[in-house]
Image 1 (tube, rainbow, N blue to C red):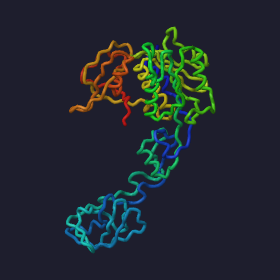
Image 2 (cartoon, rainbow, N blue to C red; image 1 turned 180 degrees about the vertical axis):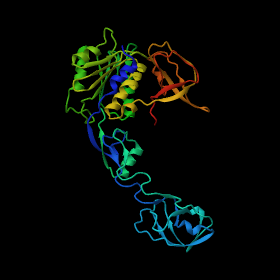
Image 3 (cartoon, rainbow, N blue to C red; image 1 turned 60 degrees about the vertical axis):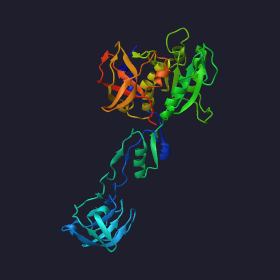
Image 4 (cartoon, one colour; image 1 turned 90 degrees about the vertical axis):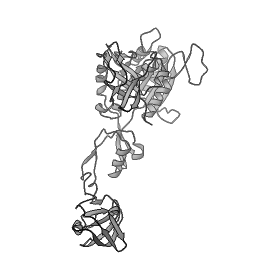
Length: 414
């Protein structure tokens, strides 16, 4: 059994998958596989930051002054009238500053009198002007390779003419839920049976992060069935699923059957297909029988515990960072945390990393986290009341109320 820090280190140097070209409308949530640079100065010319009047600041040295209105400039106007002494030009936000002018006075600080404009106050030279190349110079690095493309980053790409970008491919995931007792969600179940809750929960988590699931199956607790299930998603090529997508997976998520009981066949099935076990067992609570393996062609297999809260903890702590690394996201950005105060004392037995379900609370003193009481690692009901987990290092046994703790957000920000 290894510590969580050791497991994280094993997964830290996961290489990204291949590179593909995508249009901006398809690139959201992907990591850049190229640098994006300015293709010209931004802005390319001095521009007005406000609606107002372009003029010479010296003309307002002894206000009030009436200046003759000689023209108008809208954003995108290619022809710019010259501003001579004693004159001004009406200008809209984003319009290029005309030759001769060195200042913009806002509409609110002027009195428009048709053929002339009265200015009651002096003006600071350069006021309300966005200077040429103020935001970026031609060739300047704007977005580095590995940057995750959100809406603002998409906007940056569009502003420099990048209608298509090179991005890292996102991993395809197959889900195999194991257990004789498992039934589909809408099934009528007996007292000895369980509805498959891990599968939909993990699928929803993956969907919230934009990771495509290419296959979902319930597999019987037998070595032959598990080995066949693994082979079907790791070795098939060109076999589409119902959505027309190849079922060949980059990452396989197995839930259940990963411990050392009589009917726990995951490790034996992984061995049978020639995969290499990277680790099996992590010093963490809830649960510890987490398995990670890789195939000869660098596909990942994760064996997650069957208990729902254990499965979700292992998923967010180890699977998600691996998926993000495979997607080209930098190693120091794959596991974001918040550091917040806790609203109550936390006691652990130490000796392993503890993940405590918690919810966010917005109090007058600021945002804090409050532990959520759970009855066991199978308590999905308590999980539904939480927003994520507090991470308590293995060598910490007591955390006082009001102390700063590390919090990992699980709940998607919709």
